Length: 231
Image (cartoon, rainbow, N blue to C red; front, side, top):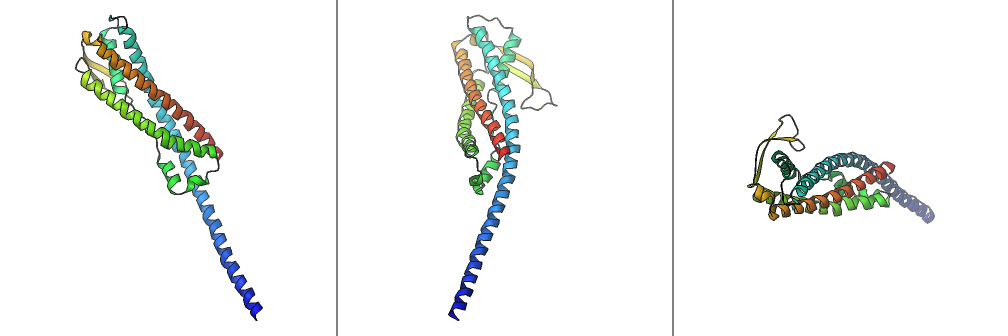
């Protein structure tokens, strides 16, 4: 009798443990399936971020070209550029220098909050994700604030001497629209001053630093996309 009870007990306990085990297997399968869904979303948002990066990088490269044009012009203490080219170059710098990149981090946040991140098998993919959405994102925020502060300095301290009033095509996207110039005023003495030179050099340094970081962002994103597709 005791032996029968023992066998029944073992069967019941085994059934309970088996039930827990099967439930764990089911939950793990569901988590992996959800992780795979998030990875698919990550590939989509990463591609969108690369598109955004391409636009911002292109605009900032235009800024560097405009800065170099003015630096070359004033380097010998004389003005060789026509006023309309000076106005166009300054407008390009002022309107584009604080163009910023904002990563779409929602999917990464979901990977972390749901525990799906730990189910990613690729160590390199996990490392790149952490680097992109935390360390580089923090550096990006700092660079954005720095460029915003520099832009504000241009508005407050340069605009009174180099004033350019643009017209914008109403049918174009404002953010990336090419702007035509309605009117402009250029104080030539200020244009040749050391103060304006200092602003241009500062802008050149900040924009170049930001471009280097955005290029690293883009390389990481492309690697993330490739690894995620292999996942």
